[in-house]
Image (cartoon, rainbow, N blue to C red):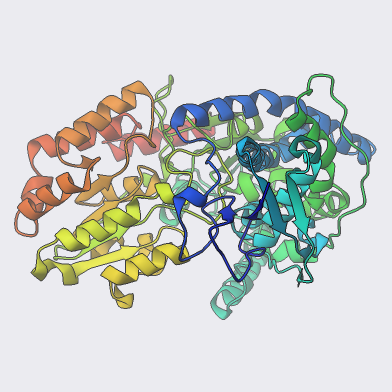
Length: 580
């Protein structure tokens, strides 16, 4: 049998790619890329994604429990078992999704009746030495070396299944560790802000020690200040003491050699055995020696609130997590979490993490006690400029798929780029100069080439700058029904253009989608959007938006997420909840 070349990532891509070359996935960049040469994609439809999600969620508690017991023993029971479980829970769920996606890719590879040769490369194994859950997600989403490292590990573990159908061809190439952790304090402006935060901390320390409620986030800064005054305490947000980007630099981390494996009678499948064999070697170093250093940082915190409110620090701020989770478990503080974003799909990539680590968790969906979780939109008052400018907001996407998330999972499912091209072509000539694009996360190289065919470079706005630019556009077209869509629909004329098969939600919310679709706010076909756009834009845009039926559809949709019409009553509700 003649061997075929198989490319795992951009790192092992040979100079010459011919008809005998296959690609493991469409994350590999190549001008001559053809779908026929891609190994079949896992999770081709929503049912497969749900099935994978349910499976991971089924084995997750057992693996989390075993890992927690190991770390608990490693630290000589210095930290409570419940605290350890809370700290590792988010990462375990992320790790399982990351590994399972790649495991399923190799499953698809096994189905091919072909022999493959992989252009092997030498890489610095320290690429797997990282500090925390945020490092892990950045490496998993973006880093070629990290992904090659883990793909090779999985293939080697499953070598017996291939029966010599896969070989690694030796190569002299060597790749050093090229990962630089995020650092939000690396420019002059942020250094000055950090210094001012430190001075502010020293000045207000005597005033805040008696604060009974610590509002870390979940509201705009304006509302955080307002709520603190209404709660009769001095506003304080802990920006300096919980500055994780600054504090993490003080932690020396290097992975210890751990040869142990986790033993579980309940985890019997080969994938589960792989997890048990590798999770200790792959876990963030913050779980081991660095946890003691983190504990020392925590001891310096003098805050003593009865209530702690979080919206996103409980995800990736390791010091905040240790401090707030420990206080909750010792009944010193009640931890309340307000959902940060607008996820309303059947899939939640953090599983039940926010519910398990908090006393009370409020998501955006209409829950039983009717208390609204959309705290970030309290006193929301952004108004758009009445001009002719249109903004197309791209979908958030990164190079390597890592989570079972609603929406497109693979690059070639990202029809938003095609939608952008079709809209620019379909706009009337006099309106094309008013059309702009804003990537919600990153622009992949292949997508950027397409975008630049239709838009000049100056028409592409800096990514993650929607909040700053939202008021400058009369009409905004969104590519996903997540937080960005809520930001836009609350501020002025908005279209939502999505592929129906990728965005599956609960039945009661689907009914509200139908209402948005009927009133030309939500579109599943770019042709329908263009037809409506050319009919109302620019002269009748606000006549359409302010019409009785359109406003009814918007308000009915927002009501499903408990968006309050009466802001004063909502504010009283929040204060009552915090002081109860």
